[in-house]
Image 1 (cartoon, rainbow, N blue to C red):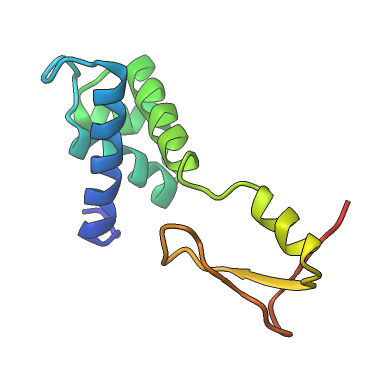
Image 2 (tube, helix red, strand yellow):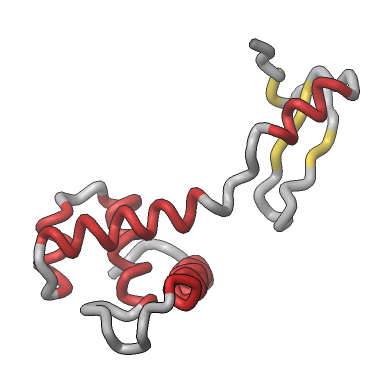
Length: 120
């Protein structure tokens, strides 16, 4: 059992399926479908179990397990905001910003008790 809401698993599965389409991966050519790959990736984040154990649990090789894990992590990382947002906030004179992951474009609010911008 995975202690993660179903909509999170389905979201990652949709991202993985879109990634596979962009890569031109033929449907049914992978050892795991996007949903099972999403579960593997989220189990790794949640349980920090060894990759070869996770791979064994779903019947794939250790190498494929690592490849699927890294692909899933990369797909998730592509969803993260980049640092240009913080640079823009700094240029506008903001000293505090909150990044809220509930909006696709990561809305932010200026607030006194928010995370302090670190300038470099």
